[in-house]
Length: 112
Length: 113
Image (cartoon, rainbow over all chains, first blue to last red; front, top):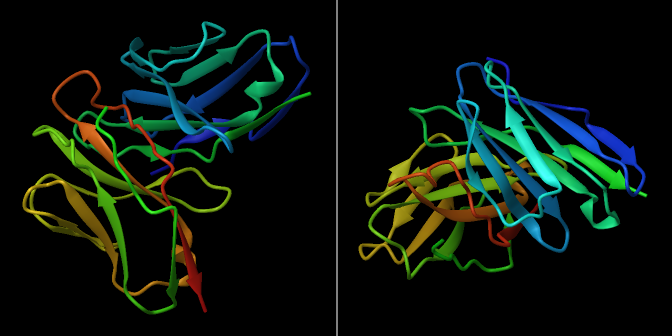
């Protein structure tokens, strides 16, 4: 069974640009969550989608958004990038029956 | 979200048991205790979870205090590959926050050869 796949693995963007990150969950998993990891703040929850609906949202500005498609694949978008958005962005998927979350390897975003 | 408290770091020797403690004095009746670990340059990895009874799986054991205000993750024989940050997380299974994980700082485990 393939794991959670995140693309791209690495990304360099300039301040003010926008970026879209992609996450393909494990087959059959309908919940996809996104997390931001920085050295200063650690792992922080961004949002969670289930069956194309956002169910939970963390404490991040509106520049951070996401969506989920009918095949459960998810994208997150960050607009008007700031230097502080440099981080490892992690995606996790869960099935309705299991309680554990499976994480991808993340996308390392660097804003210059 | 209920809070957990873990030591910042712990050290162990290879092939010895490791006991990683976690305090969660404000745990509610619907909170499950989850443990994840994050190896260097990787995403977090599920280790084990439990509600009231002690749990065992191929990776580790979870010992939960009778009052559920603390728990201990036990690695029976530490290997160098177990060096990671270990997170103890309370996960509310009662409603819409089912799939949200609130990570603390975790415990950095160093395993000496």
